[in-house]
Length: 429
Image (cartoon, rainbow, N blue to C red; front, side, top):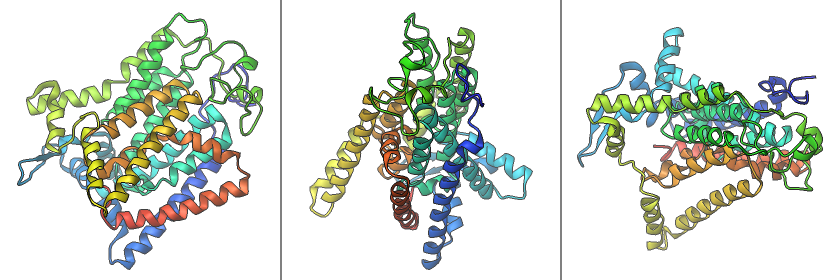
């Protein structure tokens, strides 16, 4: 009997064998996407490897890895694009892998992305398996793999690395491993600005875990009102009363989830203190380097026309689509997409997802939708918000296996074609 199956024991990291179906399915989807990209690119006289490793942000990360910070481009309109906008963890890993292997900096970035994407898929499975069970976990990973912009998961970008760190940090929170959660949150904060979402999840659950509420007896942010029979899958796992988990009864499912009496307050405090150190240290370093103090990083982002305006710029962008008949369908599509995202988030709230997931997803959504950055990049900025997929994964898990496999395969083919078309066109900036 494993730790995950032993009542009253904190779960260990999910065994690779348990996650194998999800990881194999994920690898198959990504292989299909890369093969489709290679064929499509060759037909257009382009190099798929170059598209994945040496365009857009990949070039900025590679330059940081090779030459360090300090490079900037001044545009005719007065904007200043500085490489200080790019957080350092991915370039550090590229530099280390380049030093240890024959890989170029670009090749190292590609390798890091591939490995990180597998780690991210495993993390998505681990979180979902813990909350809803193995079958839903597999479906969640496959849905994350077949996202329309899923090809970014195989690019020398930081989305896969960040998602891996975020997912495993959330898993650590849900299982009461607070120092681990803090370290992973700090690393996520060294990867992308949206690392703030992971820090917010750790701090919110951590602060609430100190409440003197008899129902909150563990450090995961889940409510406990009794034994395994009482908690079942209601509340703690997001399944409504009277509903059964897709793969097992509520009691059997509860046996795989820790019943803790609370992590040490000192361990919780340590995790909370560690969580913001990554992002804070880089932002403060940028402020010192630019001579503009703690807000120096905001000035760097302003040079890229990035900022937080509460969604005003994005709303104007959508509204402008309705100024002509030709662009109106795009405007409708954007509105439908935003409504779908909000509906999925509210569905997660209604299904009582763990608080850590709700806080994390809410911050990712807010930062992506309410920022004034380039609007074509928003789909990939939303990619780390994997808990949005959990309601869909639960629905997919209820289908017969052959039907769910057919649906997933069809979507995988469609998104592989779209990814190849997208990356050979405008692609991710």
